[in-house]
Length: 414
Image (cartoon, rainbow, N blue to C red; front, side, top):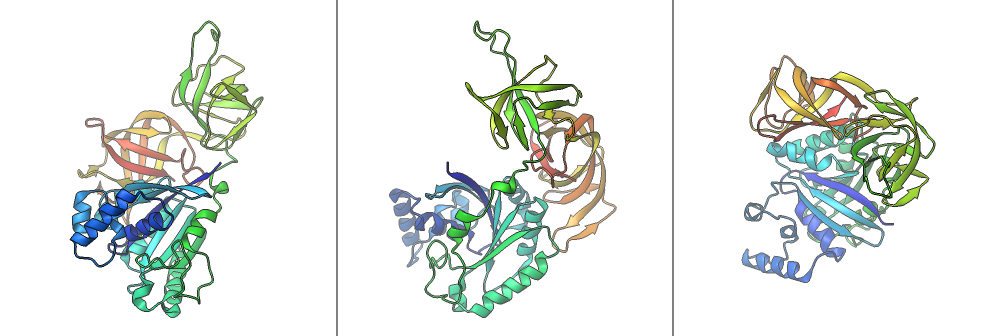
């Protein structure tokens, strides 16, 4: 089975993200001829003497006109070794929320740096967001090497600068690659212009990065999405609980605990569709049946008696505010956590982060769009959660406006 790698791309404006993704798609033969013809025609119309591969990814017309990325664009491609989903996120400061959205499910972040400029403010911001969202792997692509005559010293200096800065962040796996997205050096094919670089090409890194251990296989968590009661002649008494495992391993015969009720039972069977299986683990979607008839509904979490999430009404969260309207203390929301929705209120803003300097700003009573802050939220009923560091699924929430039903914020539980 081909593994799926989700990765997000981030960089400053004009660092060449869209060109890089275009180059990946083009050199790995993942685009159709009519797409290529449209891009060739568009490049010619703009008076370019080369094919502008960035036009492959800039889906919105306003992006093609300005030559920038505004929204999160998802692109899919596959090689014989892996399937990929790319979230192409915008570089501008006013689109921090789009970057948070694109990065929240990623296994890996590609951070682009322009070889001529070195580390810029956006590099720090994007690396910080990648660290905040606990993206396990980062590849730093030092792009536009063709414009600095492929000099090894330029590459080495940027690598040293980045290592010095990233030592303050929580990113454990960082790789560096010198590339030219425009010319195709070291993207899919090895560069003849940089024989001093002995490492892998970008595509090779993407195909071989080890992601099996990114899922938490220790702490068993199963948020219930749906109670299956077919009530047919053949399944009159069947009662199963369907959902997607968000951590750990479950086996038939295991003792389990249901939160928030605290009832215990044993797993009778686990099945995918009609097929009964012995064990299931994250991120499989399964139906479980239990030995005892206990009251379980959507939003409950099935865990193990000796290892279960904490259940609290006061939740500490790193929050990214995503709405144009600012938010004040004591504002009420719907809080969505795994499959559960409860009412909640913003009780306290402990500090907000200045993303550029990484300094804390205290005495804040309002958050505006794209700001990231540490806050306390009180919910109407207890939530069974883990810290985001331990489990990215049971440790994340979104806030939904009661009146408009818009998603107004995303949060990582501290």
